[in-house]
Length: 399
Image (cartoon, rainbow, N blue to C red; front, side):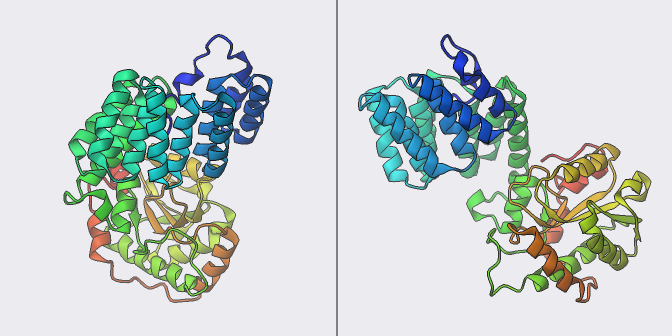
């Protein structure tokens, strides 16, 4: 969750010229270079409040939450006990770390020091949201928005409303964020959240906290998850990974038949995916072809052992989207992958692609005959907002 000022701070203000290099690296996604430049700028001029805020957000965005908290405490030491901004980002870091009581206490202190600091009100709303206090979060967010109307405030409102199961209101908030965004990044993020909210609303009126792992994956990405497991971490020694992968592949074969996809060809995204592509092609009665030879008329099935959001995967998926034809399957996928597959085998095998490929070798030695498909999988695959259906209809998938 970004800070209220995460994009506004990129408008240059007098005296902020020293942040130009850091901001450029940040926009280019070069986190290490950006961090180095931010720290150099703050060493040269520690009074640059925007520098502290932007470096904090960089660390936060990269999941370096303890480093973000350390930075907030350094800011607190530098600006002194009467400064509200350091308390606000300290509260934000504590909220991200799950220390919501401490977070709210720090944010209350920030608000007491400066009741007009929109950032503190925004982060107070976020902390209350993390604590499950949705009504309080919305009330606090009203104050933040009154002080500083901002895209991120609308985005947070959407997340709170969606978590509370108020899908229509959440969609309105996300659409407002989309329309008010001045940059492509937040605009695309808002578009994704609108699509995710619409998908969540089709799941029987349940609140997100009651979603199954498969329903959650569908709401987040539009993908069909075959594995019912809920733990996204790498399976431990007690888990039979080859058996899990083989089960996913058998379910895929059954699903291809149940949905009447009839792909004529199957291709692996990368050379290391060829053994998987060959096995799937044989199991579904399709021809194995190199990915470069795929043709939209053949309704190709694109497969990958691991989707970690690589460039080649995104490139091949974009081809399917342009064609409005074909299907994409990832045997294992990283949680939050920017370009999710239409069908995901499991999200519990992240971390070590080499180990995943070794487990796949054992899985491919097992029979891959079609298995009965769980009714929940079929229901999700039949949802009109599933990724594969959007492509087949020619409207393009909504991620």
